[in-house]
Every structure is written in C-alpha cells, then in structure tokens.
Length: 498
Image (cartoon, rainbow, N blue to C red; front, side, top):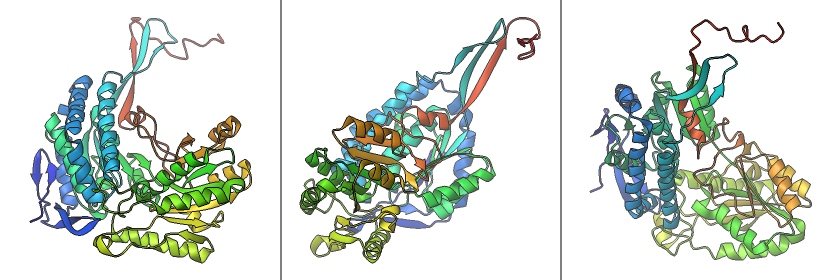
C-alpha cells in the first residue's frame, strides 16, 4: 500500500479539509506510487496562514543568531540524511543520483550560509548632517511569506527561498510543486526536527489553480517568492500587484553557449553535454542553444554527436546512467511537439527526436537526447523554452554575430563562452544580456553564495543566492537618534546657501 502524506499546519500533520488526494508517481516506473498526497484548496491555505500569523511574533522575537542556530542544525540533519533525500528525489522526479545528491548539497550549503549570515545581517551606519545625531538602519521581517517552488530542484530551490525568509524572521506558507511533494515534506520534517517552532513553517500540498491562487490572494501574506514559467510569473505579478505584495520571480531561460575557434574543443563538448542534457534538459539554466563558429563547426559536431550517442538513458537510481526520464507524460508530449515544430521550421534533426520505447523504457517517460542543426535565429525552437533534452545549434561567422544571436531572445538568465582569447572573454562578459556568464564552463553550475537570476523576461529584478534574497524578505527601517536636546530641522538647519 502506498504511503500517505499530509499537509503540515500549525505543527500538525493533517489531511486536506476537502478530503481529496492525488498520487505522486515515479517518472521512470509510472506504476510505482511514491505517495498519496492531499489535493488541498483555499480553506487549507486559510488555515495555514492563520497559523503563520499567530506565530509571527514568537519567531520574530527570537534573536537572529538563535534563529541561525536552528537553521544550521537543519543543515547538519540534511548531511545525515543526504543519501535518503537523494534517493527519494530521484524516485519522484527522475534525475540521476549524482544530481539529486548535488541538489541536496545545495540545500546543505544554503543552510550553512544562513547560519553564518545570522551574525552578519549588517545595517548601515552613516554620519548625520546635523550635530549630536546618530543615524543607522535595521531590518525587520515582512510577516508571512508565500513560497511556491518548482519540481526540477525540489530541495535546493525551496532552501534558497525558505532559509532567508526564516532567518529574517518571517513565518512561511509553502506550496511545493505537485510533482515533487515528497522531497518538500522531507525538508519540512528536517526543519521541524531542527527546532523550528510549530506554526512557523506550514506546508500545503495541491495544484497551483487552488493552493497557489489562494496564497497570492490572501491579504496576510506580504511577500511571494516563485520559481517557474514566465507565463505563471506574469500572473503572480498581476494578482500580487493589486495588493502591493512584494514579489520575487525567477523565471525561464533560453541559454546560449558560444564556442569560438580558439576554444578547447574537448572541454567545450563536455560543457554542452552537461549543460544541454544534465537533468534531462529540465533546468532554467540548461544549454538550449549552441552558437558555434563556422571554422570549427564540422569537427565540433562530429565529436558532440558521437559523445551524445554514448550517453546512457534510464532509471536515475542506477549509478551508471547519465540521463533520467522526463518528469511526466505532459512534459514529454510538449518536448515531442517542439521536435515536430523544429522539423516544420526547416531545422535539420541530426540526432534523437523520439521517445525511447521497449523494455524498461516503456515503464516511464524517456526521451532521446536531441540535436538540431541548420537552426536559424528566430525559429521557435531557438526562441522558446522547451525544458527538455533538445539542443539547437546555430552556425555563426564572427564574435559579433555570436553576441547578437545570443541576446536575441526574450530571456536573459545564463550564458557561456568557450575561448582562450581574453578579449573575447571580457567583451562577452560586457555584452551578453544575462544575469550569469560563464567563461570556459557550461551554462549550469550556480553556487549558493552568489546571486542567481536574470535579465528581461527571466524575472523581475530580484536575485536568489548569497545575501541578495535576504533583501527580498526584510523591511528596512531607518533610525534617527537626536541627542542634542533641541529641535533640529534637517535640510533647513544645514542650508549652506545662507
């Protein structure tokens, strides 16, 4: 019998108030039910927010270093449970074990960063323009944060959001993706074991149309952090904007890897293999466009196609496999539809393009790593986020053309250039319209202490990672202390034109 899971509200595990449930299945073996989860609704969110509001003051009144100690302990627990978490994550979303271990490690790193940051939440102290007056800033919590996370990094991304929100003194209502509720549950269990008090973190499972919308509309949620598609991000900004909620959006990408003639070709091939087909291409930072100079085009493609053919596709729990399944049937159909679009647009399918069938492949949603050449700037497969193992290769003749092609999309998340020419590298850093630029490395590989986010339709200007999300979850208060014993009038008493 499949294990049953529950919402976590005010320190209690409970069913959805409507009694409805949904199945969470293994995308590599669809007959395997990972668990039965609540299919919650608006009333569950209301109950979770009520708990979060009741416990705001209790959590906010804890000294920041004490909150940091609790979050640091959660990192210790995550270290102990790393392999357990990784295997659970692979079962419910498919990516290979080395990647789910990395996903978990990102959560650990973020926990320890929060622990360290708990003694570094510095304000600004500045000299006053008036005598006998001190001025400085402090940061206060917003109140309750709504966290809506995706399925492709079900431990790392919730950690990116929840640790800063908690350290800043906010309580949480957390809606994980419906495809990865088990990893989210494990994370909440770890936070609770570490000592986060009841009602501070509340977990509500269910679809975005019910739970997500209720979080957006609830007046007692003051900040929303979301990672997902640009279309949903626009909806969140629209709804939350009506109530002037603070919103942090990390959205899509259509990330280019440029390879110049002077590059280390073998290194660049390794980069595009990992960037395009790691996580089965299901990353917002995935290398979905290879911008390849004509002078090395044929040689590079011969090596790349040969190496791609050697990738082992299968169950992510098998250590020897390189690429796992696509998350679900709906996503697989979307990817296959883009393959058809690429063919119709006149791109040349040189590898893959099909669902894998036969044997164990029939048990899940497996897709061949797919490569198109003769892709022209402006084609839909070159412009739109596919979120699957599909690589579009564009031939260019110059560095200037490479930059133009790289920037000619609506997204601006990650970018990469392979070159041994420092002039190309420095000009790419300057000219690529992306929040992240890698030199001689693929478009994936962000580290938890550095800002993560992008330009244009990739988000709304906020960043995750490092110190930057702490700004999202806090309100800055400016303090003026006048100890002169008399009324002083700023800008009036300091008028230098008198």
